[in-house]
Image (cartoon, rainbow, N blue to C red; front, side, top):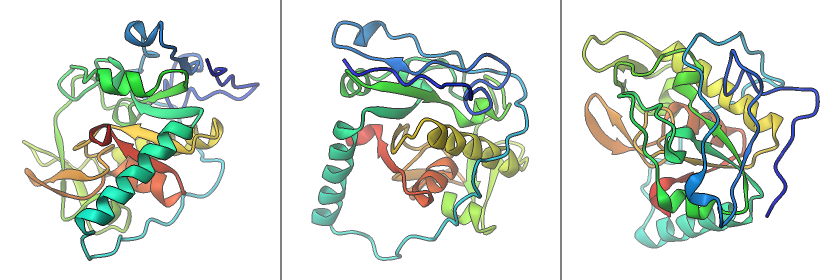
Length: 231
């Protein structure tokens, strides 16, 4: 069993649960994998966050789609990074937290099994940014998460087309701050989410290749992002 990460004097309350005490990373073991209770994700408005370092510049990925062989190799590399990581940032919904936009969880037994013996930092960028649970579904418009950071795309509510771009960017910044605070190099995030998707995201109602707003920022800072669909 790996030793859970313990923050010393600093807290991650701004990054994970803005108005509560700092969450303790969850330590999973073979005997407790299926009873894990994720740290509560706060519903209310966050405190202002000032990242410890400037946000990285998010670059547009290469336009050429990878070959099947190249994608298989990249997936294997992500899986190996996950296996080797002692501490992993994880989408809280995958751990069983009911923080999805519709108020449900996406608990995944495959994810829990992959996290056995690791310390876990649960995150929900959208809830941490004060969007509430449940909340209106949001799609990207004009591109993917990389394009959002470049100012070429936005995050809009699906029904009313309300612009929530700044809120999504705030949640991503909080996730990045938590990754830096706990020295997390690997994140295991929920596919298709406008925040956490790492291979596919919804753009104006259409599922397309690309990454979400939080994933784009974490990758730009050198973190490996693994999809739950990689497992």
